[in-house]
Length: 116
Image (cartoon, rainbow, N blue to C red; front, side, top):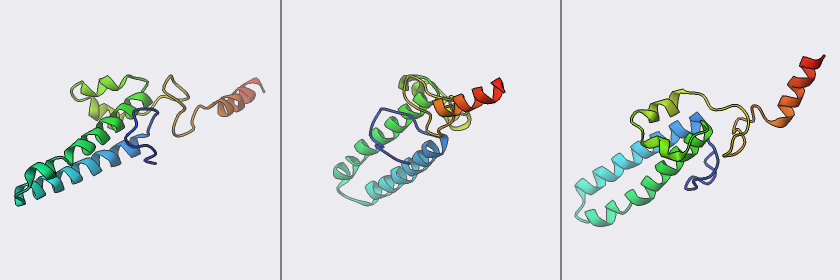
């Protein structure tokens, strides 16, 4: 979990996405409190740059898991869909299923059971 969190490539599961959202919310709140309590607000506000990059990258990877482009995350309320709707089974154009469900070996085993 959390392999290459700043990368826009690949797919992630719902669990990792929800944990990323919680990390983002908690960290943003901590930065907000530090900015309000400090005189050096400009320096502290720079911390938002990697934090924003992180949450956008995680959102793109979750969109990829659904088989969509990362641009889908700008659709209103699509974040809720990414939290509650399950992923695509098997590989898609963005990579293998992070759960390992629907990979080629599993499909071959299912096919053998159907043939029997």
